Length: 436
Length: 162
Image 1 (cartoon, helix red, strand yellow):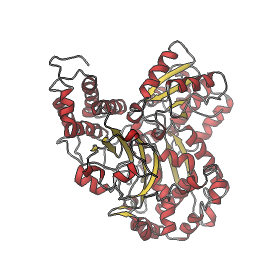
Image 2: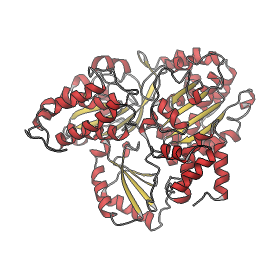
Image 3: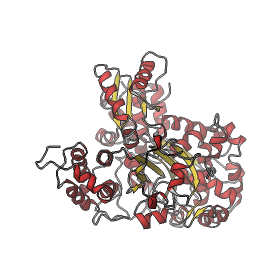
Image 4: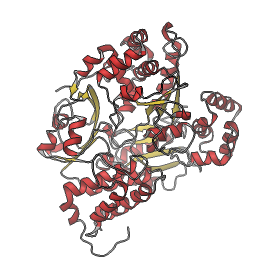
């Protein structure tokens, strides 16, 4: 199964200049914007975006058309905010789309803003993406010069300004309400919802927050027609998605495939992952980014389809941000769980006690387990700490915290217990407390 | 040092992009780092005056974000990823090596960072926010040396091309 390239087509076709205005225009950029501006906004929202079944590509998978429809009628100003704060471990698709096809993103932004009647859009780009920021700024400048942004876009009477805003190093700002706080010049701490951003978002005004890949997909939906796009994929996972494949695979990288192909195909197909180095076997997979629970290398798991709903219902995992991390038989799962706990402990914003305290404790306990100093009761201690953050340890999770960061940190512990309890217990042979 | 007249003008242009001036705190802190090589207390006081909040509010915001260096860090910030993909492909070895190699070099600030979104080329690092993938201790050494010797032009401490 080869890739199905829609969103990644230009950057593959024009590897030397896909990010420039010349390269973009030579491959049809902004053609669809003309079409879209001739349509009624409601038509785009209903007959294109809702009909396409497009779901957010940032992690939560919420239907994009529905998200737009929550904006209260007649309430202005309203804003479009673009989430380009990609930080979910092992996700690297939005950086690629930003660096190598910023005009596709701007075209998607213009279409979305027109559809929701917003006249000011902010792109919140992760601070560490220096090249992406540079290319985005150049693309915005060129788009203004050519009349694709600014006043009276392409003679349509529609005005749109775009501001590119750099973050400064905080994973939590990828959470949409923390992102809005950060954009207002505050510490990036999530807000209690409701009110949802559609009602009270940026500067307490109605706001839509959409991910880079989501918006980059819009021009293709308009070009194909929503109904036609919905024929791609499987079930309610329509279309294509870019999967960021990494770890123990021969060909790590971003692959855009139709939703619904099995994990096995993504990992092993010659023109996708190309198999595991030295013919080793898969021990476990973390699908959907660090926040997801894990899968193993069992046939049942490898044959599972890349379908957001099916993997959630059958295995309690999520496709999340589209990251797929592969770990071979040589990997110590407790060490990976420790490093993820360290990540969440570092990135916890500190607002909610169960997460602030719990992630730190999980990191300490997992450190001693993974470094051969674990005690027999440690795995159950971890589950207890996890239960205080995410009562019941279920998927989809419940939470004692404002945002999903805390429960996300619990996923690795639950997976360790579920699939590797014996292996972990064997590492927990110390019968006296060892200071972490 | 205070913003240069050119940067004061840039700061005012940046503030004008936003419906509310306080939104400009992050971009202005980046601008200060571009100019000074770190984010000084003096700069935060100046940013506070420009956006109309107290210096404490600027510190409160800036202290949340890892990219803002509130003490001098030398000329090069080397950010080495050790998150899980880099963990299993040799990131920690690169970090340990660079930390030892540059322990006594005030010009080079080596730090451990979280996922940089370069996992397809793990292990990865950044030098002043410029990406380098497929690292080994030796290759990382050679790259840092190239920046030091001027064979590569480093971005500013906030990652702006110069």
